[in-house]
Amino acid sequence: MRAAPAQEDRGRARRDGPRVRLPAEPLVNPASLRWKIASLVTLASAVVAAVVGLLVHRATWQRALDEGEARAQTALTTALAAAERGDDPEAVVTVAELPDPLASRLRPGRPVIWYGPDHRGEPWMWAARPYGDDGRRAVSARISMGSELLGLHALDRDMVKAGLLALAGVVPLSVLAAELPNRRLRRMARTAREIADGDLSARTDARGRDEIAEIGAGLNSMAAGLQRRLRAEQRFTADVAHDLRTPLMGLVAVAGLLPEGEATDLVRDRVRVLSSLVEDLLEVSRLDTGAEVAERVRVPLAELAAESAARVGAEARVLAQGAPVAETDPRRLDRILANLVLNAHRHGSPPVEIAVRDHEIEVRDRGPGFPAELLADGPARFRTGAAERGRGHGLGLTIALGQAQVIGAALTLANAPGGGAVATLRLPAAPPG
Image 1 (cartoon, helix red, strand yellow):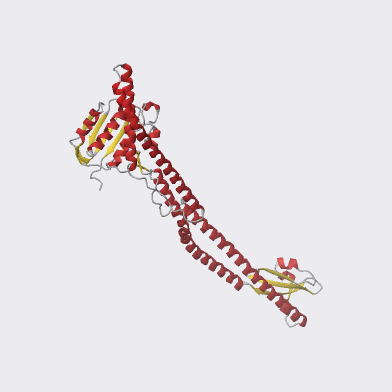
Image 2 (tube, rainbow, N blue to C red; image 1 turned 135 degrees about the horizontal axis):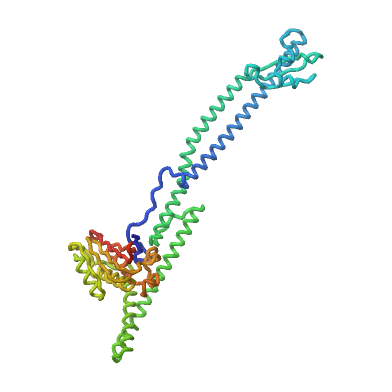
């Protein structure tokens, strides 16, 4: 059963029933904007850390290779000098003793530098140069790169640890940073929901110069525009009712002086309808001011329901559970029930039933039910809904909703599963105070 909007009050068009609140956002929700921003920031940070780590790795290793080449070149120069003097016979080796990649690069008169493993897999920086004219001998020297490689691995591990620690700090910080705009957006969403519920005075904080502030300013502007239009509609209703009242009183007096006849009866009936319309408009305008105050007494609900139906000449069966009594304003409650019963007869089909329970009164007919538009948007003055609901001015439900708010009751409109319209009035268990 969906709550319909209550009458307008000082630029506010509130809905009866509990307000719809946005659910609290769970701590971890991958679909939320907060976690999307945090994930993107974390991913970007991880990519930056990986790129920086790769660049540092390459720069460090390249520096180690350059230093190794320089040391190997120096060692080769020393070995060549020793070979020339005959001081180090082991400096001269056969080409076959050299690693194949190094041996294949040897050219007469040119030194060759090569990094690679020996036959045991240990990393070395090699330097070699052909020796003699037979092409089968060479002078070689090598520098171990094991310590440099171990240092590079240690550096990589340190960078991975540092990156993980940095990400451990980036994740909560990014979540916190993302929560700031997300919190503003959620406040705006709550304000928009309040406006949708009829609180046209709701505003959101639109300070700042960013995109979120622009959204907030647009939301406030929309609410202000709706509020101006609603107030203009309320002023129009009040002005029309007051301006028509005086000439209508004269029209009623003149109609009473007409000679009896069929035409006179028709004129008097139309004058009576017009007079009822003006009185309804005046009542709506009084409700719009928000100055109406309920005068509460203890009221037997079943008796008042039967009297309300009888007073308007509408047949309705009263079904009461026990003898429920409520402390409320009998005149306003009578007005509400009379309008609901008349609405059921005008726009629905008999039988009309009034079910009275403890602090709850339900009026049901067997007609086509309330139109979907009325259930979605609530009653509006001069709008009756779908054509199958019959003709009328659309003021009966508007007045009923307004009077319900005055006495602190909640009026909800729905369609019964088996057909027909159902209007449920829930009176407060205790007078609001």
